[in-house]
Amino acid sequence: MTVKIQAKGMSLKVPNYVQRAPTASGIMREILSEAFVRSRREYRTILDGLDFTVDDGDRIALLGRNGAGKTTLLRVLSGAFQPTEGMLEVQGTRQALLNLSLGFNNNASVRENIFLRGTAMGMKLSKMAELVDSILEFADLAEVARHRLLTLSSGQRMRLGFAISTSVQHDIMLMDEWFGAGDASFIAKARTRLSDRVDGCRIMVLASHNLQMIRKTCSRGLVLDGGRQVFIGPVEEAIDAYKAIYQSLPGYVPRYDKKIARAKKRAAARRKAARPE
Image (cartoon, rainbow, N blue to C red; front, side):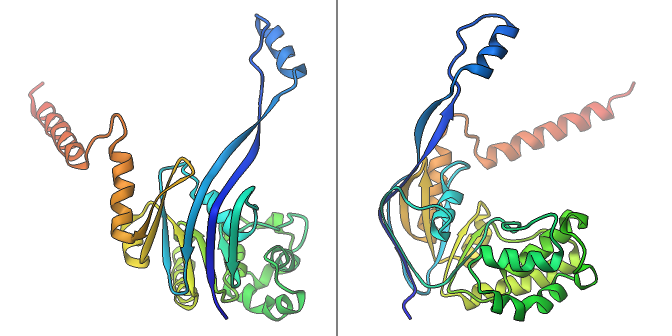
């Protein structure tokens, strides 16, 4: 089976509701104005005319500043959002490690939430029934399987979501930053499983600011800025294109200059501390 991602002229526009500027003066009048004046609907372009192809075996890094559209693109690739313009074709099964609590219900039991999350992921109930015990064991939650989800800590919920999301090998892995949350014992086995899933997938798309991780795991890079595609190609060239974006910003201070400034500040503090009272 062919595994591939292809986008041609792909754009995403979403409605954005903006409150009209108040015309009344005074606090109470402004509050009443905010309560009764209808907001104005505007359309905002989040992704604009993307053109790229991801082939079998590619490991793609999504690079860009905060708000560039990386997470939105991952959601479009996962099927959560549909492009409003252009074309997107995804061949192969896909799994997105974006929102580990998607599909959870606080009033349902831990065991029931495995089925709810699995359904949200598009998996069959018969398949989830086969995986329940192994998921509970991996998440160390077998003893609380019949408890309501709301009784679990945030760390336990995270473990449950990760265990469900990585319970099956998929063709395409979509990730927003590399997983690294939880207690030490769980992180160790979670990283091992995640590495196994990444090695076993045929396409990986990873959004991250960790350039060292990107160099280690990715072969190509896609750079976004303001929802537009700036570059796609070899990962080192993509990193250079990403650096060129933020280095051109007003107020940018090179890392070397920052180190010098911090060293001078520490030296001044030591001189001040050494002065006699």
